[in-house]
Image (cartoon, rainbow, N blue to C red; front, side, top):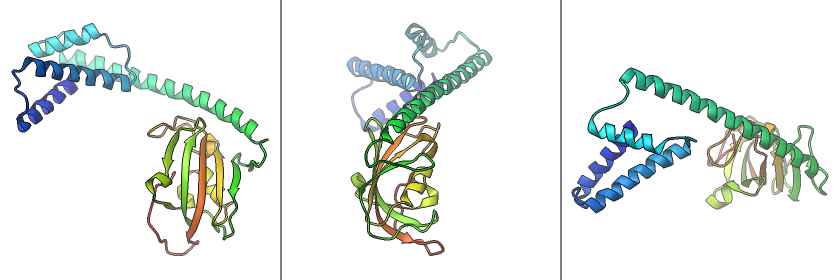
Length: 245
């Protein structure tokens, strides 16, 4: 409820500052009322709270506007603390289910993919295909800094990152990114373009990332090694880009 009141206060402040429609305009305030309700519902949905009783939400809203309440402050805090605890437990359970499901999907795919012509599998389980061979030198070790262009997708083709779209290559040290990149890029020569299938344990593992990367997602990258920026012991150069650490 505090969130709803804060939203209303901020909205009314901006409305006053902008000299927009009169607050006494019923049609305008009906729209405001709908939007505040929608934002509350959308926020609850985003948090996975889909069991709220609309009738009780309306009762609480009415009581709050009337300056009364069904629970005292101690009861309110206890109920909401219990709610947050249960909500976190539910989120953990859902994350664990996704992690188990995605790990099984990744394992099944990699088992089939390793027999595809041109696909190589390393001892760690990393799979790769040479799309374009390179002619330059290879990174000396994991402390080498490189410049690359890349595109990252999930197994279903959904793209989650692309230096091509930013029109800006990424620069980083190989020991500052996910294990699959650290290993895979050391296989490449400058000028090469590889496709990598990175198992969850060489990617982000059970930890979801902001956006569409779920727990234990198999990651697919197309990577071009453009340049070796510095070798071990040399001073780093170049512009920092996104990295997958």
